[in-house]
Structures are given as structure tokens and as C-alpha cells.
Amino acid sequence: MIKERAAGVPGWTVETDVVVIGSGIAGLVAAIRASGHGRVLLVTKALLDAGSTRWAQGGIAAALAPDDSPADHLADTLTAGVGLCDEEAVRILVTEGPDAVRRLIDTGAHFDLASDGSVSLTREGGHHRRRIAHAGGDATGAEISRALLAALKQTDGVEVIEHALVLDLLTAGGRAAGVTLHVMGEGSRDGVGAVRARAVVLATGGLGQVFAATTNPEVSTGDGVALALRAGAEVADLEFVQFHPTVMWLGPDAEGQQPLISEAVRGEGAHLVDASGERFMTGRHELAELAPRDVVAKGIMNRMRETGEPCMWLDGRHLGAAFWESRFPNILASCRRHGVDPVTDPIPVVPAAHYASGGVMTDLYGRTSIPGLYACGEVACTGVHGANRLASNSLLEGLVFAERIGEAVKDDLARQVVAAEPSGGTAGLLDPTVRAEVQRVMSAYCGVLRSADGLAEAERALARLAGLTSAQPCVEAWEATNLHQVATAVVAAAARRTETRGSHWREDFPDRDDAAWRGRLVGRAGRAPGSGNGYELAFHPAGGPANKTTASKGE
Picture 1 (cartoon, rainbow, N blue to C red):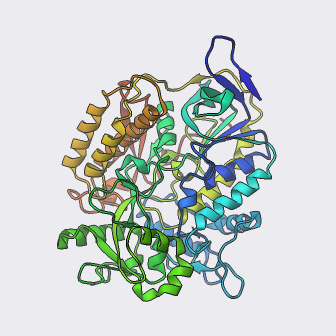
Picture 2: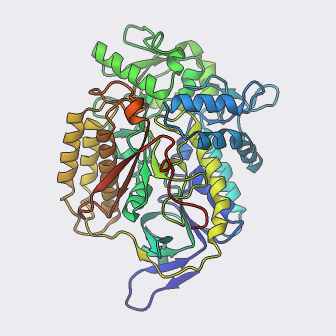
Picture 3: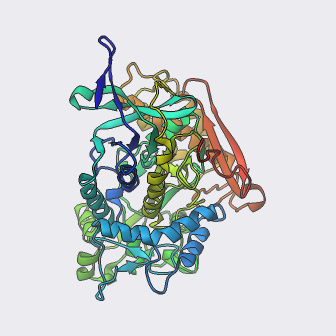
């Protein structure tokens, strides 16, 4: 029910029980589950299927095969995370994961099948077993999104608002009490309004657009992390931005969303080679091209340095035309659109920003340090990924922890919806032109390879950009501000961690340092950039009492 404000007061207000921000696998599953306990408003920035989930090619990891086990999946995940995974969170992921995938199948998701009728499984980097379920060859995310959207249509008690950018958290008495939105073209809900709710679930996806070249769609501007920072919530592990090793190289000036070449292509036998055709990953790791993503990305960058080449190549010519057409039809079509035929030519590849292993810090039920505020999917830091996400664990994390949140929110629904105030504000919103400058700075100084000098230059550049304020609070200004705020936090964490670990690579500190850095950097900020509130970091040693968010059940 829409409640108009008093005459002369701009805006609108909606009241619901749970508001879910985001419509990828995490947001859709959380909304469907939460609808069993109360009214749900599902808000998405663009269209329902425009987020990162639909772009997922490789698949979803789970121990479904007879020769696999959750213990084996746990071991591979911990290895990929390079000593920083929260083992309890990983254990939940791998033990609850298989049944969660089976429920997804029961919901209507059609995965590719083997000749015996079982789910067809492949391998990806860091996995010692074939445990990646896929759909449509290389269209897993699109199929999962289709199935969940169909299920959403059959779910009572869920209202949807599309084309809505989340702005700030509403709070009352120290609790989350809703959000403010800027809705574009929704009739009586056009413009800025407020949603009052008993529980808020952030499922806003990633922050890849903070870099000039990324696999993320345009909507991935770190909105959820920025909102959480302005609200005073804890974030963690932001320095661990994973760069996917095999993104199609489109030239030195390529910007925006780049074509991803799924890790499953290497899992099916394609090789990484240099200009001479040499397989340079052989001998660098026991799994060669199927080493964890940070190892492969570093291997590619090192070989580019050694040879002076602008890219490396992924050679799948030996797989044959029939295999490419049946197993990877969408990747094949994408490559051909860009002038490369994988059947006859190696694919030029470079690493590009892909996935944020860190985010808004949560406990094992998605609760953040602000009571009533939850986070799941890429926006969250559950501790599952540590310093480097294991391939295809992302969809599984979104699925498993969204189911947990969907049940946990029922504890909030006995509370009254009360009058609330925004936790941030429009003061200090940055000019939309800041977006491109932030992306340039981050790619130049905080990309795959980092150093103290480069990170210091990034800090200076971001500080200068903080002074370019916007004349009006438009959507583009909010996105620029969010990107700037997230970039500032990422750079601060990257500068503080003086070691190389997982997806964080410091050329001036090339070694892993467990004695000093086995733990997580937890950050907290005030309001938007330009407010003078700054950003604070604290190091929490692994296993310490502060290693998880301070949120607790019933707060």
C-alpha cells in the first residue's frame, strides 16, 4: 500500500515487512523465503534479470557426485582462500549446498544432464573434483535467473519495484528501519521516496564498475557497500578483489564490461599459451591452468611482463567445432562477434576485475553489525571466500545464505514499523564525471598489481576527486559517490595489508606473511565522501573474538 505524504511535502512512502534490495540469485531466494513470514518488497536497480547472476557462465559448485564430498569441497575452498576463510562459514556452505541445489532444481532450474540422467558436472580452477553443475552449456546464470523469476511470479506477498536505486538506510533506535530509493519512471513512485520496513536485506551485487575494465554489468557500482558504510556498518576484506584470469582482450583502451571466457573452458581442456604457443602454467602449479584464480592471474601477468606481450592466449582449437557449439555456444558466439573464432584461433585474454571477496561483514545468518540489516551474495562478506574465491562458489554462497536470511528475518517481524531517519544524506554527493576518473585511478594503481607508491597516488587522486561535488542529487551523482566511497575503502585496505595473499598482490611485499597478516581488515566509515568523517581500519587476527560481526540474534 502506497501512502502519500502530506500536501506540499515531496516524495512518497511505502510500508512493508521486509525490503530486499537486488534481484540476483541472493535477492530472489531471500525474497521468496522471507515471503513465508510477511510482506516483502523486492527492489531492483534496473530490470529483474539485469544483475550479475544472469551473466554467470561456468556454473554452481556443490558436492553432488558419488566420488565427491562436502569435506573435499571444504578442503578446496580453504586452500583457495589462502588461510583467511572462516571455516565454520565454509562448512555451512559445503554441507547445506547440495540440498540447496536440489531445491533449486525442484524450483524448476534445468541443469545439463549426463547420459545416465544425473546432473552433468565439470571442473574449474582450484577444484580437485568435477562438481560444477551447469545449464545451457555456458548459460547457467541465465537459467537460474529464469527459474527463480518464474517461481517469484507464483509467490504471494512479494511486490516488485524496478528501476530503483537504493540511496541510504533508514534507522530508528539503532536498528535498520527501511531505505530511501530513487525510482525512475514508476508513476506515483517516481523520484525519491522511502520504504519503511522491519528488516532490510542487501543483495545488491558487486563493485566491479569501480575499475575501468571489468566483467561486471553497468549496474555493479558498489551501492550496497556504500550504503552500509554511510550507515556505519562494518565491512571486511575489501582489498581482496578477484581478477578473472581469462577475459577477452579487446585492445589497450577497452573499458566497461568485457567478455568473460569461463573457467569451464579450461576445465574442459583448453590451454593457456604465450605468443610462441608454450603452455606457461605447466610447472607453475600442480593444477597448471586449473590452479586457483589468483595463481593463474599472476601467471598471466608475469608472462606478459617476461614477453612484453599485451595479452596471453587461451587455446581451445583442439576441442573441435562440435564441442564448442554444444558446450559453449554463448562464448563461441561472443568471441565471433569480436572477430575471433575459437575453433580456428586462440582467444586473446587478460585478467580483469571480476568479483569482490569482501563486503558488508555478516554472521552465519547474514546479520550485519546493524540490527535488522542483512547482506547476502557478492555484497556480503560471510568469510567463505577468504583472500580468493574458489570458482563457482559465488552462486552457491548466494543461494545458501539467502535461504538462511529468509528464515532469520522472521525474528524481526514482531517489531513495529516506526518513523525513521536516513543514516546518510545528499551533502557531499560527487559530480557524475568523477565516475570515469575513479575507474581510471583504480585500474592504474589498485588493479592486479599494487605497490605502496601506486596506492599512495590513488589515495591522493581520490582525495582530490572528493572535492568535485554535484550541483543536484541525481542518480548519476549517487553512483559516482558510491564508486568513490568504495574505491577509497578498497585502496585503504590494500595499502594497509603489506603482504601478497590471494587476489591481493603487492609487488613491494611479494610474500605471504602469516605472522603479521593472518586475519582480516575490518573497516567502518561515516557519511558520504566530503563529509570529513574519514574511514577507519582495524586488524582482527584470525580466530579472534572480533573475527565476526558484532550482530547477534535478537538484538
